[in-house]
Length: 286
Image (cartoon, rainbow, N blue to C red):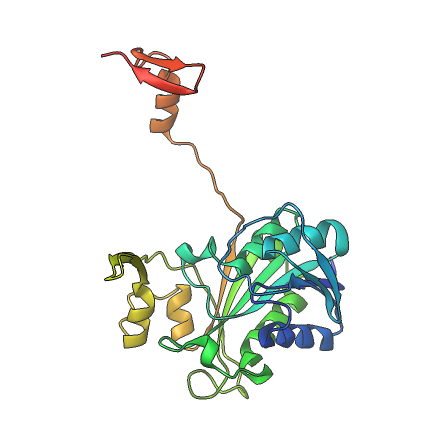
């Protein structure tokens, strides 16, 4: 299979710098790149899906008043049904770790594409811990490593048979500014990784009678206290390498003897529980 046409989407919005960076790189490599991306910021919406969306013509393709998953469905089923590959990004901020994958709109667009049997690449750029992405004045050069890696993978991964074994690639690249990341004049090396399993979310009360959620992972990254072992996406990106995680679309399934046994005994156990057919609830006879 050759790659000629690319559906490009993201979750930050169609007019962001990271999106332009990938569009420019992929177009310069000779691909027909058609944008089908959110008209506004849709970060962290996961695989949220709409019933109806408004689509506007845009100089790069189409701006969709919807989520990244909307863009993948609308694009692959109606606007760009002949797309050979879906590329999502470049996200301004990393998408690292197992617990992030389901939240990320960028990754979710790639997951949605997988259900259409279309190879997909989700690309994000790591903004150093402790920095607020909204306060950065980003330009195309900052995305040099993300763009170069994505272009390389589009050029070679399909032909190499990568997508015969996986559904999508989750790519996280360092920021190419020469200070907080590798020098943009030098290629950041690629490491094939697995998403980190470390999870350190918690919550605490605030004086205003609210509850604030904390992601302690970013605090640990800021102080250099990185618990992730070698081979994980977070370890690779903090040490200046491009993380490429080959993944399958959710959800994997496997039989377990204990669960099989429970299913077999369902009708004979807890016979004292009656189902209330009128309201769909169950009551127990004591």
